Length: 195
Image (cartoon, one colour):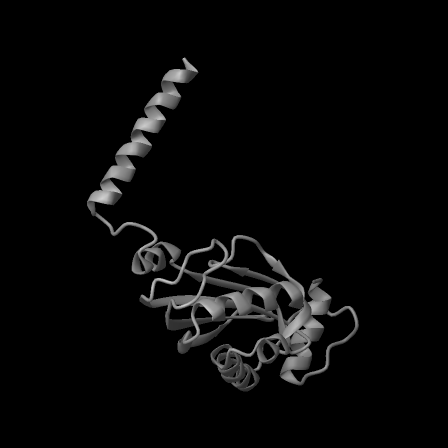
């Protein structure tokens, strides 16, 4: 997105007029963003892909800690959402803080808490249901165009979630210590083979 395009987008969001080629962006409108955040949270908690996708541009670029790849466009995002909600059918989010607006840019961030129970296949990577409940927190980073999210980054601690699900050993456990010992041995062997 060029700076002029960003300015025009922000100007429309704030209800002000932007001149052609204008390079000075304005802040997002707090009232619009508050309303958008409510709709965003309701869409996530609805488990209806169409509700969330209507808040994203067709060419959205979406990075999520839970996805091994960057998603591009509604098709890839829809597949991810369906897989996520199948694995955690009671997944819920609560907005804790924000929005935090990036001055002069069509960007905002939110802090949230999430919870859910792993009762369905988690693919990727293909973990069978564990029946375990998870509680986690994270942040959304949004970039807006045409009153929708055009770039999305969601970050949270996947290591903690893996430990809650039992797919990664608990910190300090005998299994974690054995894994660390195996890694050290592997590095020692690798170093000796290089000589």
